[in-house]
Image 1: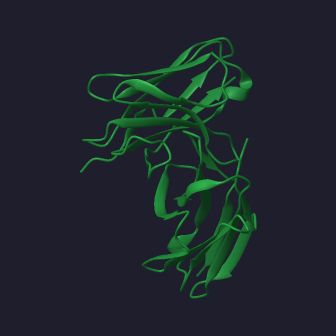
Image 2 (image 1 turned 60 degrees about the vertical axis):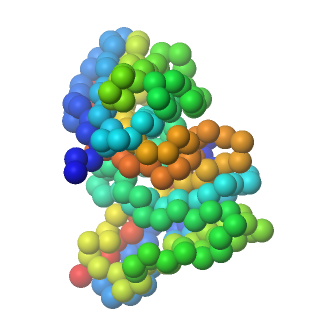
Length: 111
Length: 114
């Protein structure tokens, strides 16, 4: 079963615009991670935010976490065509030894 | 530095056959996890091994098994293949012991069962 649900399922924007993706989950977590996947190949780790953190930045990426609403958002600023990919949130659940992924958001950045 | 490597890249099998997928972790990483990703879905956790011991198992039937070798490489075996086993199989390694820590993924093995 999949814990996280990304929203929207698909997003199409123009180069230079910002892209925001959301993730909701159901159970208590230790951390939440975002990964990127290009064309059905391996996933690339983008950022990890712990349950006691509210916001984290990495380059053009900004992640927020609201544990009271069981939700997270990933913001990509000044998007580029190379950002075109599927983005997945993954949760490290309390009391579980497995990372649980959502179904992903497919982002298309048009040049 | 080499990343996580997986072999083969693609594989075609028929129903009922058995398959072995291989993974070499990043040098120095002792944790290896396996995931199955069906088209249009996110990866689903199958197994995690740390220091050659199974640390976690997902909701997969006993047809799926894995092991980790002394050099920390790993194999995933699937017996009695079903059409529904067609998927991208991803291996991930980590320097930390928990499968919920940051994972570094390989390119995957695409398995097609006919």
